Length: 339
Image 1 (spheres, rainbow, N blue to C red):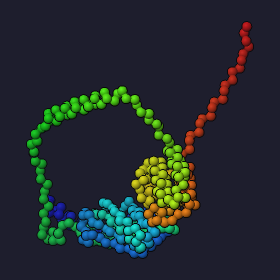
Image 2: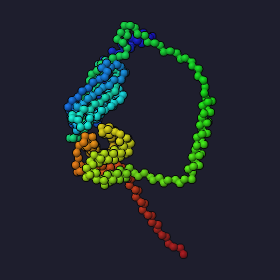
Image 3: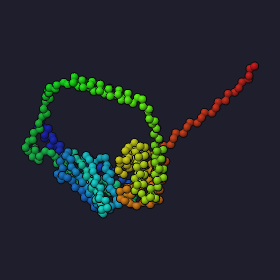
Image 4: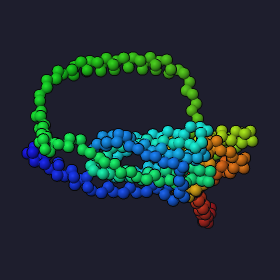
């Protein structure tokens, strides 16, 4: 039986290696954007000899102008590869041209010559969001058995039968420890209750509705008038936190920790009605340029960005349920008085 299993493995492995890998679907977050080409692109695999199931690093180095920002927009299905982790090394500040490095930790679960899928990127430029698709790369995935395994007659060892192991029972000890812990906790709780039972309870104010809190934050930012003080970068940081905090609480995800591309992907997955997607993409692109690329922005652009915050709130917050109409008063006909 062992020899039959080994022969079946070597017969099936070449067939799996020759099977074509399914082409990944294009990324939804940037598929409709205009294309842009970087100044330079390099890709390499470490280690160069990739084995089945073992992790390897796929490194992509993109050279681009300093006023552009590249974000990886991964598709969920990578074909014959599984994504284990990813990392992004941003370019050095003030260096022209800029160099952004992406490192993807992958593993392959098929044998033979495999093609790494094309990787789309969401690019923030002064002209607006753009799209770049990095070409795929062909690598060879080898098996973990040596090349002469079949000729040498590599043997597969049988699974050992179950072995009885004597384990000393500690149930009584654990029961006594649990009882002792319960007594200690009870004494501490009683003392805590005696200490705080006579203290007056602090008044807890109810949390205001999300739209009220968001509108108050926008009004507060408007009153500070940061662009007139030359603090444009602080203005966009504050406005971005307000809008991201509102979207995250409104649609139920951590928008503050999302990158720009992850934010758009998550919102498209939620499919909110009457959502100003084009306006949000313009705001995110302009905000990233001011915050990370040190781009300039006029007071008029700041006012338009603040106006977009009000527009987003008005279009996405659900209207209140209209009250039911009051019932008409019922008139009672008065009968003849009986004297």
